[in-house]
Length: 333
Image (tube, rainbow, N blue to C red; front, top):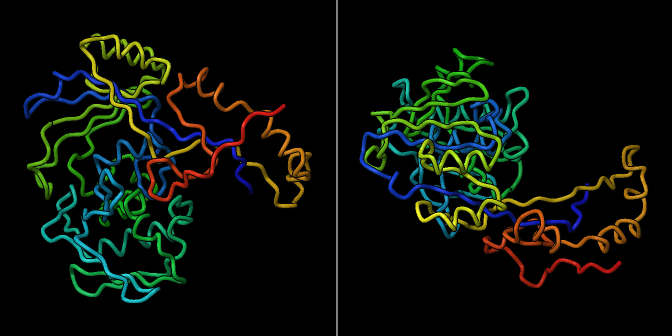
């Protein structure tokens, strides 16, 4: 498969009511554009699912605003050699069912991500062979091959830890009542309507959490989400680029707009198999002509209100790996 240079770096647009960020004990009401898929880090596929699971499931590591890897459930790591990663765990952490988060739980979760049938994390951590317990707060990750991005991958869903007892008891239905080690625990879910979480009192970093409950309301239409925000039935919501100007004109609302790490692209199969036997798949000249016919800036202005950034690489401008010199091809019919 080949990524065509039809790439757009995405912008995260969030509108919120400033006065809604209030006193401890209140409910935070979040507007969601889609209903998440299964709330299980091993099997989740969607962006909106990750939004909800971030409140449910802490990760081994996280990253800060400058994309530096920072501690989470793990306090640090060290590469003993190119194929051996040592991870040190935070003490005193428990899952939302009271089970301890220790090296056995980390081994269980990482190997579940790798080996469970249908796991969407397998491709992310396939360089891993197995995990060994060194002591209650230390694991040794043994790699099949050297793979330097492995720790960075643990800042996303692959780094979310699940409660082993709950996962075993829940089986394929674990995602209906997930148990993790995050700040909020699962309460209920009504499909296509809402998801409710409540504060987990045993959370290891409880002083940082200022709401007793979080309710995610599923509202696919951006303009309806915005109307709910203006009416005071939501506190924060993601909006579409075409609604950004309406937020800016409303003195009661605030808009946060930041480049994201995501991108949208067109992928063309050039593998040589039967499915690639098309003009686009066979002939580089056709692909080049298609690329030259695209007006990325017009697409950006008309569809995304000028808020996305045309790109020619699968790397966000936010990343230190972004190369300024690699620019999109200009339209030339």
